[in-house]
Image (tube, rainbow, N blue to C red; front, side):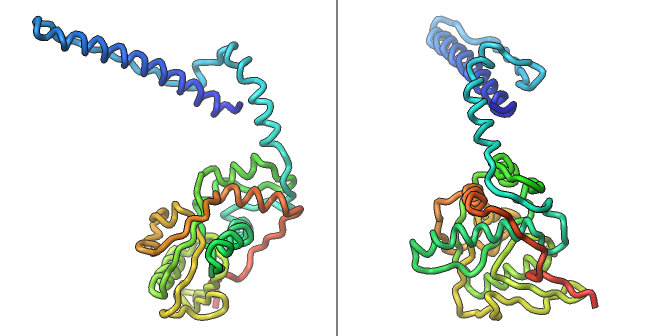
Length: 269
């Protein structure tokens, strides 16, 4: 069991003790309340707070109890899923990055078949957020632990239905931020001043009469990272966590091969 899990166990134990103490206090209070008719009442209550952190040290009996679980969990977390030829970090480039493209590709490869099996449709693009990438992907063997480090959240993949107006707002959001948010299926070009030159989705300009299917996460769909353009959109929940999609993709991909490309560019002329 990790230090985090241990600390969590201690927190639970402390919480249980606190709950028991609270129950006793409430019981005593109740008893005294019932006796208020006999002129008894609670006059004073005291409490203290103990910080549960590493300064408390370990408990041998607990260490022995969790040892086999800790060993088994460590073995699972260290299992190798894939191989990455070079270090990838979310700040490697300004507008799109290999690790961001890896995230977007993972959603397309893993989630689109699920969406198609349920609706008969494919989504037009995938969009995630730069801040959601929580760690670099190191060079070398990629383990289950790496997958949890880069995506520790329980975010679900969902597909939003956007009209042309909402799609234009989505594009404007990306243009204004000029940040390497992971996306796929959309191609944006800016001039040297950061103004939009073109935005193509699947090679075509945005059609105001068209309905677009955008794969994202429930966190972003609900307004995370100020992505308000999803507001009011219909949504299909794929019951598929983004982290699980990443793990499934890594398991079936022997060697990763992602590069910085031209899906989001800014002219220098």
